[in-house]
Length: 164
Image (cartoon, rainbow, N blue to C red; front, top):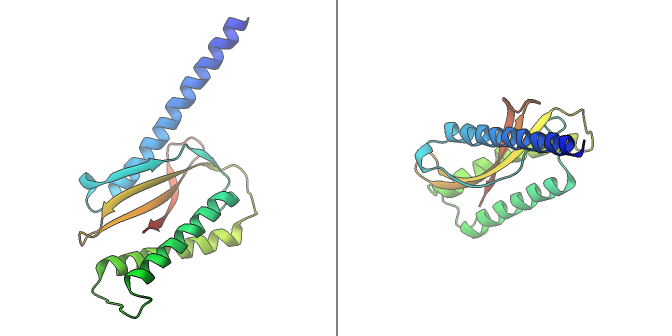
């Protein structure tokens, strides 16, 4: 009987690992398809798929990490522009970073209003950190949060936070 339970546990583990691998591959492919230069994409880190409860519910640790990243982005912009006293609209790096930060802040605001309202299990979430170049050739880093359905086969939402 113990051998059967051991075998069943091992099979469940293998199926689970394969499913997680497929979700991670789907997340990476989603990013590959969304960047301007997919051949130059560098995946820095990928989180393990984690349970998602809607598209706006994050743990306190995740929210804190996002807020700290936004603070680092602001500090980077301020440093590069000498506290906005030497702002140069031709600085594509600063302009791109500021634009991506504003998009991210919109998502974060919506998330903060929803935080604490843990809904029913909706599927999976994965965070991918990566480096790429935009259409103007300016390099950038970002972390993208992707939300997958319960089967882990389809992405139904994603958003990005810039990394300075």
